[in-house]
Length: 103
Image (tube, rainbow, N blue to C red):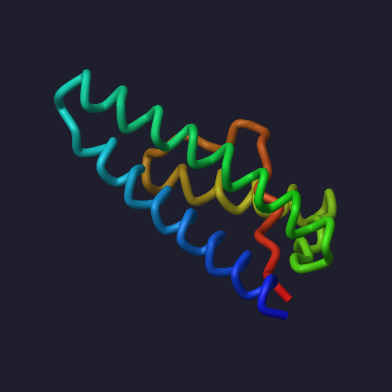
């Protein structure tokens, strides 16, 4: 159980760091700093995925159920109908299938 808690803590820390890096990148004007932060983020995403793979293989992580095609289409239709009201563009055909949770 202690290993599972350590993996969970590590994933939570990495995810928080990735969010912070994303915020910093969005607010950075200096291109050299921006590229450095982007490299840190990319390295962090690689590390996070490797740890996620380990957690999943040890049954520490249960991914969320994948969305059905009907759910995906309903969401696309909803977003497209809302984008007409706000002037934003619609979805590009990609779907977000949700996030799993640690067990």
